[in-house]
Length: 105
Image (cartoon, rainbow, N blue to C red):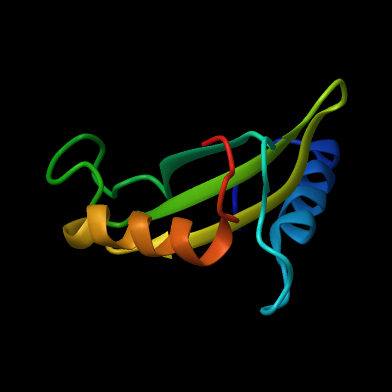
């Protein structure tokens, strides 16, 4: 259904999704002096009919925050779907709910 090319890709994707899913009420990411990176992307399938029409019509915008752990790379992750028409407010609320004060963002 998702169009992955190999079992290894599916396994890696599943592992990342399970890692990203966090029950509510867990400790926020970061803390004093701990770096956290945030970013946004669009998730969804290809638009029917090729490049005709609105490019992101059938895609959802997702915000992602990743705790950086040196020297290993990344630590805990938080993701959320946001409304593209209220991007600025939704990103601010996501950061407020998921990132601890005094975090290096």
